[in-house]
Amino acid sequence: MSDETGTPGTPAGSAAQGGGPRPEPLRFFGISWVNHDNGYAARRAGVAVGSLAAAAVSCLILNFAYEGIQIADTGAFVTVLVVAMFAICSALAFRNTWEGFGKRHDPQRQASLRGLLAIGFVGSLLAYFFRSLTEAPGEKLHREEYENAREEYERRSSRRTGDPSKKKRRR
Image (cartoon, rainbow, N blue to C red; front, side, top):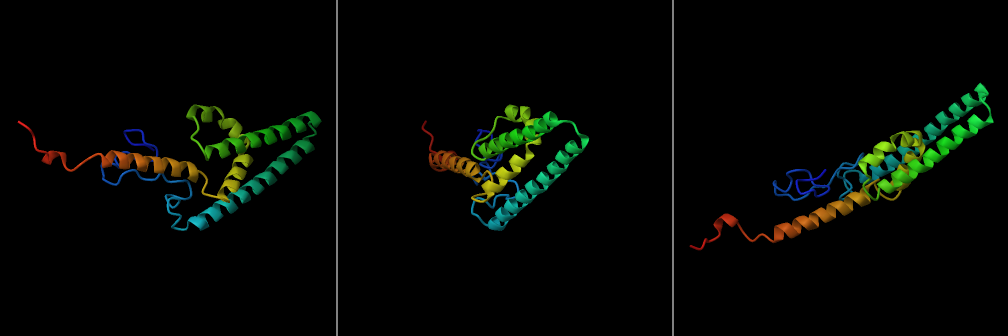
């Protein structure tokens, strides 16, 4: 989210409320990533375990699909093609998700990759698992944006000296 000035991580109107920019909540973490409070460590462990368990279950389901292809006796070419498709899409989804933790993606590019990322969902789950071992997924990006917004707010508010309505006017 951003305010009217386009400052990332700042909800609209928050500067008008006098508090300056506010942190943008992360999925599963809310704003606990700012001070690492409110069960941050437990949430990180939960995200790590949950994403790894979801990836394992997904691999079992993909194994059933592979066995179905084997039973259908479609031939080696189709089998290799399907396995390669899932492997390549998972690798691309992992890379895309991992890069998304460090920089914002272009929404149009993300929309065009939606099908590929859906096929490679195992890669995205593994990226969540590995990132949650060190930090909340996306925390580094959000922290940089939040700190930049705070610094900008401090610079803007420190330039003001007093109440402008109480200034003496020259005649």
